[in-house]
Length: 169
Image (cartoon, rainbow, N blue to C red; front, top):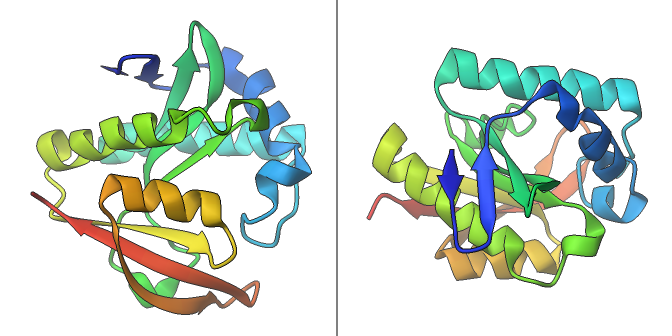
């Protein structure tokens, strides 16, 4: 569990499914994720099980992010198997419900996760991947100190993405 000035980052619970499913069902939230498709409740449940399993198997993963007791999204780490060109790698990412955009929560949560990754997990290098048109994520990456490295394409979806990276301080 991590805390910031405004947020709590914690492991996932079964009762997080409703909040996660609502976030994943929003077309604007999912616009730049893989092929841009929303996820239904069962897909969100599968994702929740995977996020919990990643923590158990790897000792790191995606944190559930809370604001005043409400799930607002997630931030943390995953292996970006969808982009073979960057492997082996660990990616930092985030996803928030749309009504929580524009308040600095993504940067605050991701900064806490990044410190955890470098200081507690021991990552030497972390990447972040964004759709080339996703300027909100580009700004978060810049605030986190992630440097642009190169553009490439996600093979399965023919999606243009930019890869950014940070190394352990």
